[in-house]
Image (tube, rainbow, N blue to C red; front, top):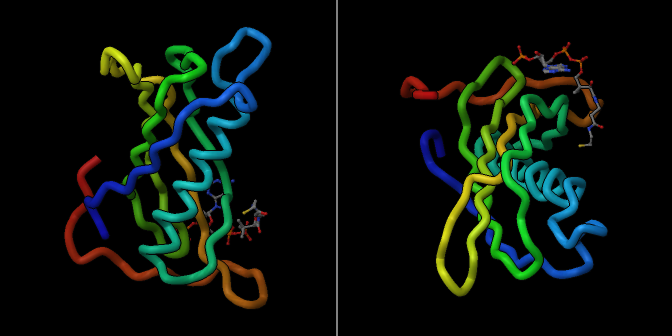
Length: 129
Ligand SMILES: CC(C)(COP(=O)(O)OP(=O)(O)OC[C@H]1O[C@@H](n2cnc3c(N)ncnc32)[C@H](O)[C@@H]1OP(=O)(O)O)[C@@H](O)C(=O)NCCC(=O)NCCS
């Protein structure tokens, strides 16, 4: 799983836009957190929770009707935490034009049944960031 990319593709419907007709930031964050959860859970094969979301940058607006593609990958494995880098791209369905829209890093922590942090497997190969 280390070095692998995991993707989610969605279309932006009106229910997920703000009053300007562009993607609501809260929906973008929700999808990013969801992907970080999937990536970290598949790596750890343990229950994970979000400890923090960092360096979130909304770079370009996404229009209603565009596709969004989220790409997640692990950039750091700690003792109990896994840091997942998420890039979200927008794609115009008709022209294919793609833009890097939103980026961020999510720190996910594995927890045991008591809700306390528990160790995650250590990578066998070095991570490139
Ligand atoms: C995340 C949580 C388990 C951490 O518990 P904690 O007692 O503070 O953990 P520790 O201080 O022992 O640190 C455990 C690991 O988490 C990391 N961590 C804890 N808080 C962090 C933060 N705010 N930002 C980044 N990393 C953090 C530590 O660096 C450490 O990583 P490492 O073991 O890889 O070195 C706890 O704060 C929690 O349950 N938070 C609520 C989570 C939640 O409800 N998320 C939303 C829904 S999923």
